[in-house]
Image (cartoon, rainbow, N blue to C red; front, side, top):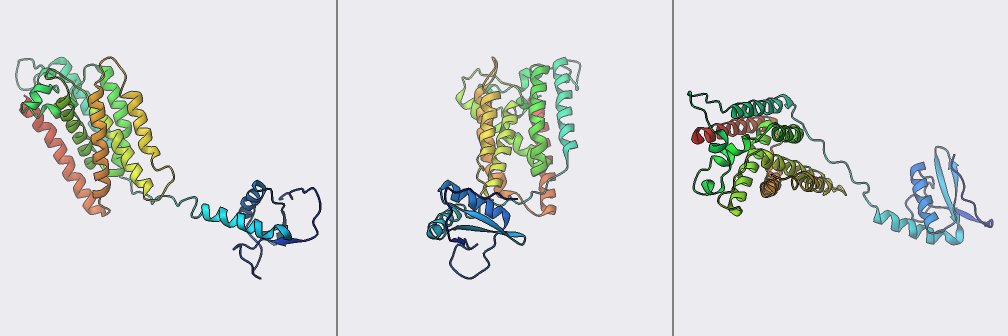
Length: 313
């Protein structure tokens, strides 16, 4: 039951506010939700009102001498709030392929164990995996391109590995659901590799770095940018919030720690933004085409990693 707004003195004549806010003889009843909204508008403008129930709807009444002022205030409110709230963005078709992402993370952990043991699968001599695969700035700029990729698969210790798997796995599962595993992992690999290249350009020649965190922050930026474009297409009021959240994660997790390579994190993030804008533009809506693209990019990503270690070894 709706309460009637008390007034200081009783007015003799009350007239109903029409639903279209225009004079005429049309039905004056309005839905309950609209009644509540309009009552709040009139209350904020200190215009007296009262309500009456008409069947399943209601009438909103104002004193006759306040009628035109009330209609003007309500018309202004409706103009300012036209098409609000905005419609929800179109539902995305998600790819259910979490298992593949988990297996990739498992292989990364297994490879870390191999590198820590300095095991050589092709002979009896020990292999200095970190030495031949780290992102050495001077050697990268001298043509050892494979270090851009091999460095992403190396970690200094179990804590370094676990942090990248935990954070990266969280974002990779979601990114793979949106883009497909092949597309997602290829873009993340590119974010890490290009981020390492840009970092090598600005660092001192003897700068060395390892770890997947450059690619992880590329994944963070990719997901934030793709979500930003998705919500922007529906004119969502907070469409920038997803990218702002990604920036917050970069500031919180990517700029602290004694051995943190801030430059690599920043460049991986920036490349991820660029690739995220491109990915949203070139994503196919055809399921058959998207599947072929994902398979092709998955094969290309695996080939790049294998080729990088082949050249490094």
